[in-house]
Amino acid sequence: ARKVTQTQTSISVVEKTTVTMDCVYETRDSSYFLFWYKQTASGEIVFLIRQDSYKKENATVGHYSLNFQKPKSSIGLIITATQIEDSAVYFCAMREDRGSALGRLHFGAGTQLIVIP
Amino acid sequence: NSKVIQTPRYLVKGQGQKAKMRCIPEKGHPVVFWYQQNKNNEFKFLINFQNQEVLQQIDMTEKRFSAECPSNSPCSLEIQSSEAGDSALYLCASRGVYEQYFGPGTRLTVL
Image 1 (cartoon, rainbow over the protein chains, first blue to last red):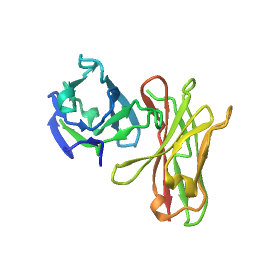
Image 2: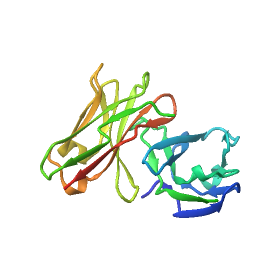
Image 3: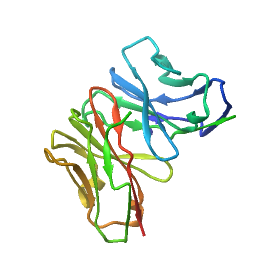
Image 4: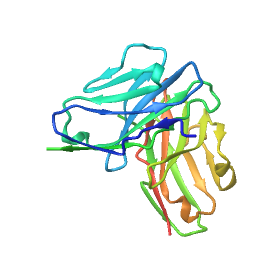
């Protein structure tokens, strides 16, 4: 069973607006980490932002922020003031802390973001 | 933001041929991961190392894939006998405290 689910296959937004991408995860661990990465057209995978499960505050980095709803096992990515160069595929990922594979990531299927001028 | 180096960027092999790719993890990152990303963007964990020791590897890796991470040398992933289904983007990542940072990947095409 997939541990990380992204149901939005593709989203198109107009430049300078705000977009939210959804992600739900499944884990039995009490401690885990959630990440968002983006993959550019060239294939490069870039780390964007991290949320630690034990932190109540939503993480924010630049124009990326997270909407962490732990009871719903949800970690949404919010991009404000989108730019053309934000067009990419965005992956949600989870790392459980059980240590069986010392931090392997479980990835969602990805959401393609298209920013229109 | 990543300093992980992967070579070559592109690799073309015939079925049955060996395919070898290399990775230099970010300095100071003790844990190295290899993932395979298929054309549907699905990621598959292959193997990971901590300070040259294998931590975990999937069954597929145990059969035809071999990997090593010697000290003072690049890490490597080798497919002994390539199959068409091995065509994918092979990603190396290294982890510091929390995040994994990915290299640009080696895109393998098996003809």
